[in-house]
Image (cartoon, rainbow, N blue to C red; front, side, top):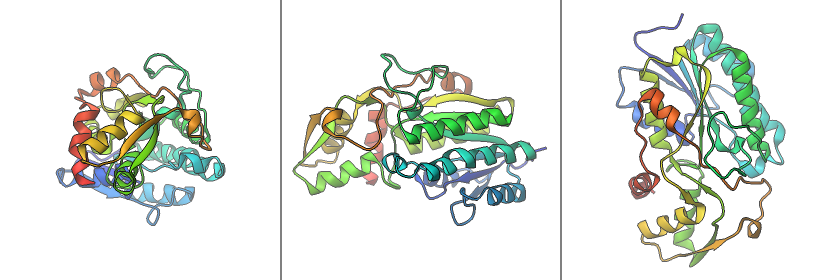
Length: 291
């Protein structure tokens, strides 16, 4: 049986976007026993290492914030992407079940093909268009098949001060260039990793995880925008004299295909865990001064 006092949480991907934000917020929750792991302390390409660390730490909750997220590189490194996004999740779920822990698996909007004309609900059919999306979906399916307790959270367009992401790239390019071309026909909602990290902590403290069995939820900031809209706001907020030119997806070919529609319904996660989700514009304005 899992420990109940104090609550213990193990986080993978400690140096990534979400892991770094969780580490920042963890300072406000000294009542929780935190264990942050990275490649040096728990290599997700080594299933034996995963099993060993989980058995040693015996956390109440595992937050898998680690992933192979280099979407374009995944097209040429499918085995590595599969190892981290699928096989590691298989082992995490199995280990969680063995010690009676709950797993929170972070997934992605890229499990959908992006051809729908309305936001995606949790029960909509998955149909990933690229290797990254396929491996993340395989991770979801492995978790579901394991019978382990916990939830899957699909997030979209995640950004933070940490690691490479669209907001960081636009912030840099806005200082280096007079203009940038950004696709305007891919629609979604950005997710500030700090907002997601706070939601995860609230979920962990809700006491409801043990009653869930790989239940799927969606999370992003509220509102709608395109990548072009987001880039324009970044330049305006940062007072950068860089013109943002809207282009079509076909004008910016990439190794991995991207979904045109990444909006997701979030009513379920808000209702089940009593969450209040900020609008993307509100969050980007709070986040940008850190860049």
